[in-house]
Amino acid sequence: MINALPPFDSPLEANLRSSVLQRIRLEIVSGKTRPGEILTVPTLAKAWGSSTTPVREALLELSNQGLLEPLRNRGFRVCIPTAEDLKNLFAIRVQLEGYAITSVDNISENAVAELRLHAQEIADAVTARDTFKYLAADRAFHYTLISLAGNERLTKMIMNLRDNMRLYGIESPAGMERQALSVDEHFQLVDVIISGDKQRALSLMKTHILDWEPIFLDAIEADL
Image (cartoon, rainbow, N blue to C red; front, side, top):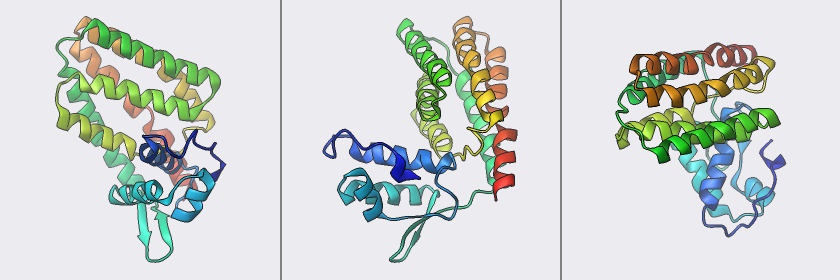
């Protein structure tokens, strides 16, 4: 449940709305907040010691993105995912992220260092069995990587797809095993980009993405 999360350091922090949005999204896409569950602004604001404004804005944005359904005078209901929608998202992600990684021509030492830092954060999260930290580090890695293509619209499209993909089963035995296997893949992606082998980069990215598909699909179909 969302109200089981630790409180914010301060309800006045500058990125409060972003933090609220990220927390709710992670709870939904990971399946911790169940399909059909109703979220209300007062309940979440009280649980986090926050004002209602950032919570309401976050819920409205997630509604616009299709993760929540607004209910008149009741709050927001978590939309029920479908296997077909998940398959479509994977198909699109493979194409877009594959294009992005093959569009990278030059990579600076600073970018390499940043990617390796995020890859190590992913490894540390797996060791700690901390899925939320894993997801945050994985997002940072892929954002940095995709941005190297130099196409802002492409980056926004891909990150929106990633942010709204249901990750059911990520903490199942198969999901935890896949997290562990992905650690080396992130370091390999950095090395292959440095080498300039675009075909190898494309192949590795496809495997990196698609090996998650059966895990998520099995979890959704078993749960709904």
